[in-house]
Image 1 (cartoon, rainbow, N blue to C red):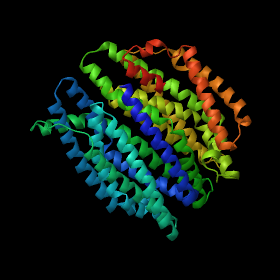
Image 2: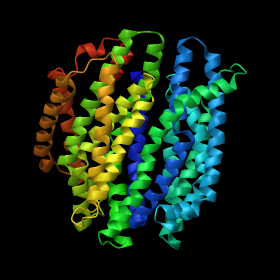
Image 3: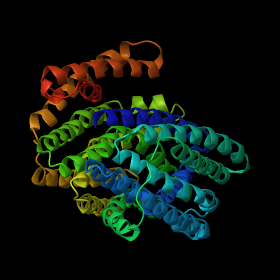
Image 4: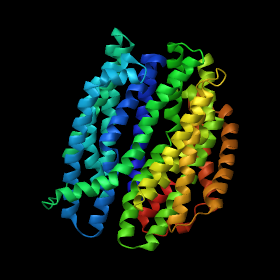
Length: 510
């Protein structure tokens, strides 16, 4: 399980770095207003994609893990073929809907100029939906290599193609530049599907029983899809609500789009950057827990529960502390063109959302635990409760010109905090793992304080410019944090009481 987590973490880290470079390049090409339009179009695309395939991949991974644990590989492959046909049908339907209803969707999100971007991204829904079936099978088999490789291939192609077409088409206007960036998404998803199809090996399965398999997949997938769709749906609601509330607060359309672009295109991606770790842990916990439960391995279940809970705190707390303390330095290093009032506003948003990094990671890891336990509806319900609180709080705060877009940052933090708290409560109540407050919270917080002190001392004394000084200080801080976690026994030898390759992987991850 840990080796797969490391593989996905490494691939996710590389993709996040490439994605960050790509977003910086897009920000320089399109500006804050163009980035606002790109985020609006991408959020609608993500919502449609989640509706087409979001839960099927996770449901298939759990089913495949259970079938393989029971030594039924032919049945596992049969479920895969059923899922592939289902995702192809749904992806085609939602792709056609995206193209046919692009004008209405563009008006719905409050930016009619995004119509072309939604049309050109329609094929990507089909390609990405079918890829999700392949990814779900390989995750269920706990072979993360095809999924990790496809992530990297897709990100590289999106970065190259999106930047190329955005640059070429932006000569005709910002809306065309946004459409060019979305065209890069379609190309990357097509290449990713071809890669998933050509790599790996899936054995031939049994025939018949398709209706039963569809029912089983949908029973598991619908709650997961609804939970997964909350994220892009929140993005769409966020965009519409933010633009409407900012207009009510007295901002023009251009000003509102620029403020929303700062929040969604510049700050939000950095806040979700540590999510590559929690996503890797969560994706591996689902099939690992499903297999352990299917085999009635209580010892293995306890190990997975304890590892997930500890990983969320040990990885999430230092990220939140770092984002809060070095908000301006990180923004200046990543977006050198942000200056003056824009930099000041982005810094304030970043600090407000620093706790969101921890809450989002905890919600993702604990949600994966609940899905692996078969409690697939609970993460959806908890996330919907958080989303309802977010929308209500944003509507109350963003009408005030003194708060404006900061209301969206506060609402996002509340949303993930509520989801994480409810998920954790259910995991502790229903699972058989152990939660130690000192190891999961207190010790990581103390070590994060030591890390922060070292970074603050080192940052102004390092040479090579602000960007390299931040890299050097971050490296020193990470070393101090890792040493502190080990010395204070937040991580002990008991965490490595397993075969050597897995122990080394767990050490590297923590």
